[in-house]
Image (cartoon, rainbow, N blue to C red; front, side, top):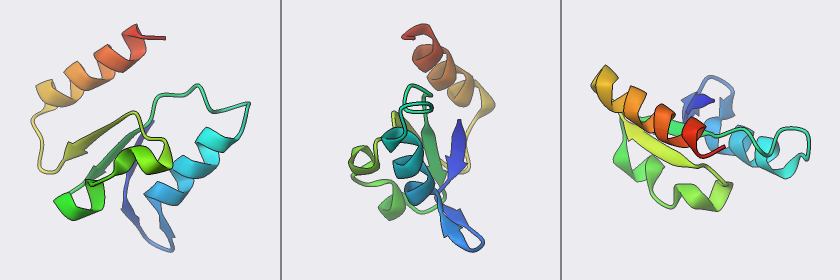
Length: 72
């Protein structure tokens, strides 16, 4: 899953925490993304498996996704 940190009405970090705390979804790889690097710091505190800073190159995104999916 790729989740933006800043969402209207909620926070992507909170969504990630919920996903990672639920046994039925905690195995899904989660990448957080944001245009603000400060929102991506300490991403592992919410259980995210990776980050990507916007704007990003699509090849960079594909490499991160392939790495996470390959580790399943």
